[in-house]
Length: 600
Ligand code: M6R
Image (tube, rainbow, N blue to C red; front, side, top):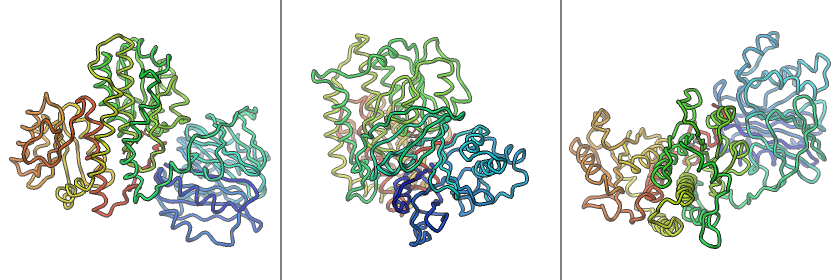
């Protein structure tokens, strides 16, 4: 979702801002803009559409040494040039970019700024107008900025420049991600380190309700009352090559291909030299104390949680519930005596999940984040963290994070079983090793899936995924993948549930993708496949080799059955990829979607 980058220094930062915005494109956006000050004054350029469109209108003669840039994912007001950031105060003295949502913007507009003519439909514009109002009333800019922030309810990451002071860049953060990057003779702000990785790997973390005054040679962090806050810089572990597409046409394909490597990396990170699992003592204690686990997540992470529930209950014997974060947040169920909350999130920034975290922390419950991003909000604010070690995931459609989440949840469940002395009939690390090899084979032969996509999905307007048990959960993920990037309307269903209503939608040639990897329900799901075939469905069975039958479209090598989701999801990810490609869709940047959903 919206991305911010800002620079203050001595070089021409136009390219730094534009390049930074390109690196933030993955977050999802519909318009973009930059503003900066050079020796001729302040210039602002913004455009609906892609950064490439913005580049067209930024003039060559503009050489700013201070500037801010923004990618906008519309919340208040349609995607348009008028609503694109940066926004300016009435006199055009102040120019501002904002990521987040100001919940009381309407109240502020009517109670404090009723004489102001607003240009845009955004919530953001009130912030820049408030700053100008307080400056007009006699406050210094820094004071006016802090005073304005105190009026805001909601989330924000902000960059602000003053046309009358090209030596200062102002920033602030509350519940939206923002980092300060440190350089030699320059400093930057960014929503994500990857946007400025080519110029620095040194960063300062910001806490909520902090304000930053950036000069080209120093950075001062204060709270909303002007109290100085000390902060030590950290060096990011991110490598610029991790975010490079290399020779791949799309990040999604690269990330699908990286899954065996990620699984091997998880083994390296979670296994000690004696072959034992490495899990923090604090996490082990929390797992031992928990009488029920509540997993909270959204989208793909929620689907990984469904698989994880199976592991936590079967391997470690802890009753587990999985909840969609946005529902849980406002409908808290009756909780057990000693709950443990596990928040699963690739980005670690998802606002819906964070909202649950804030609420359960207020009640004093223990929390564990499972995330891919070490310094993310969920990681920082939870009691403990388990990392996915999947490397940056750039494509909006999550792939390698899903398999990494399942692998880490399996490790957690196995570790808890070991700590409790419960019997296990498999060695997780050796199973992961075998699965990584199986994944290699599936990825190597991906053109089979490209043909299946052509055969089943090229002209369809809808599609169903069915399975039972773990296959049902994987089917939900397959359906999400396909719908989000190919725009084919599709749903995942429990095989047995179809006949209770959904089967009415099956017509001649409706594609139904059937997953068959679970021996105990093999006959049942085959029966469900027959039911839809009898009504004209174009049935595509993906089955494990020990359960396959004549006519199946795709055969998966057998792995330890509970871990089959790590394997069976790969053809579904590829199916979505090829279907989207064949329909000419923008695979990495699907319409209306954002990678990191930082608004509720
Ligand atoms: O970063 P998170 O895992 O918290 O994100 C949750 C969802 O927004 C995310 O999984 C989304 O569903 C993906 N686009 C799915 O591919």
